[in-house]
View 1 (cartoon, rainbow, N blue to C red):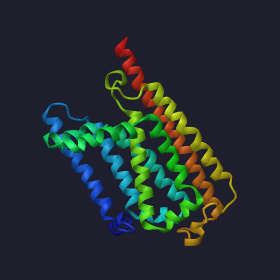
View 2: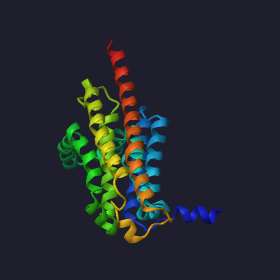
View 3: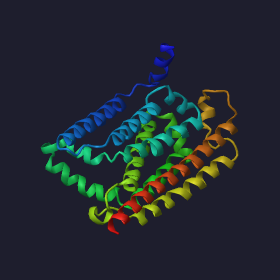
View 4: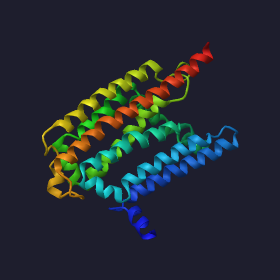
Length: 270
């Protein structure tokens, strides 16, 4: 049994960058949380658990045997991106990690880094930019010609996965920011609802298009061979469904969190 577990956790292709990135952000979060606890304002246990679970899920789909199946089955690839772009990114953003990361640097923040981060954050965290990137990258990487090249090139494949994770975290950080928008100057709750609607319908349309298109839309999986003896039409239909329904459910979950935040601050003002 242990050998089976060990085999499942062994990466299909070892990526030092993936391992180091996960260790770096977990260590950075731990240091920041420890410093905030010393100041009497550390993150709650559920936020810590949310962050660690999100990182663990993203690592699992990128750097275990799951990655092998994601490379040779279209519907497993869509499950992989569902975690990176939605579930894992959602859990990481729900933990509100930026204040914890900032606390980790403490007095050692580099002035140049801070100066570069402010305008970059204004651009990336702009609601229009965040929404366009969130939806646009899904369409870009699922464009059949682009997808074909990405699945046959290790650097492009890793760039695809990394971009989906980073972009997903940025989008959900804007949506799930727990601060009062009026005091923090963040996106208002109405804007966040519009962002969710703007992301919802294009994903539904794309998922429906993949589901009901003739088989062979993503023929790279036929060229390379599938991990399981599954009919190509079934593989494509399942991939389309996973592009369509679970992301829509995550959007509804995000809307419920935003509604809860709105009611909380509305009661405080009242």
